[in-house]
Length: 318
Ligand SMILES: [Ca+2]
Ligand SMILES: [Ca+2]
Ligand SMILES: [Ca+2]
Image (cartoon, rainbow, N blue to C red; front, side):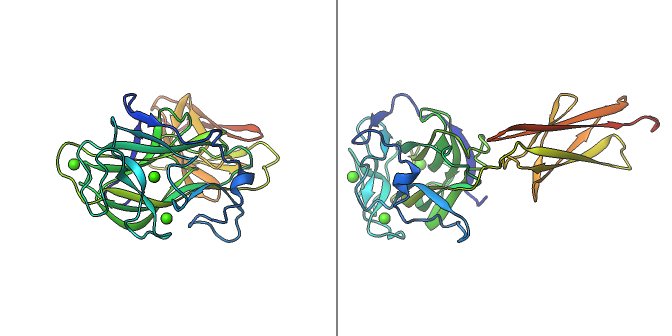
């Protein structure tokens, strides 16, 4: 990750003022959203993408899409004309609306605490193998202290997870991989997903404009379901120098897309992707152990698959 970016998990404080979007039933079905001819920047031409949310902020804000959260009477996220972005003239700025709203070129205030959220969006209608949340970010903020957030939640109320940014960014394309969301992991195929963008400042030192975003896109690829449960194959590489330390390799066919769950004698082993549906993790057995049983499992839309393997240390001596 770039400097000034880190993973974050937070709840929205209960005391914030909440302003609901106009209208009701703001769930955009893929059919409805499919008329928006926008693909994520990271899409390759061969993939079929379904856009669940695409907002260039040229049709009013917060409209029927966004719920606003903010301290007392503001300021809060609102549309304005400031940085050109990729779809001028409008973006949304973190202090562009409400009491104490700033104009383009002015400093954001201390103690700003405002979020814009949208959802729920269903990622479960199609079998999704990839998905992204993206936007264009312009940011000037006190480094580390005053931060912009890009978040997702499975409840829409709390447990927001994602990334925080601080410092300076100009027309920066940022994205979150929905198969690897911080703290949540793979959220593809979740039936309800909310997205949020936020900004917070502390009691001293501010900068010009704060955070502005444009061209928010939430999109997933669609493909045929796997048709079968995952199947897993375990291989073990022993370390000749330390015979009870071994590397576990798991090949997953029809997998969920995230790392399989692997345990040895009930202890979890952290698995990382080596690509090509192969995952790797290391385990050290106790010196007295005569054998170790490895269990691996994974779950896709069709169900779960698992595999077991037992390796023996007999005859190795202490
Ligand atoms: Ca507005
Ligand atoms: Ca725009
Ligand atoms: Ca500050």
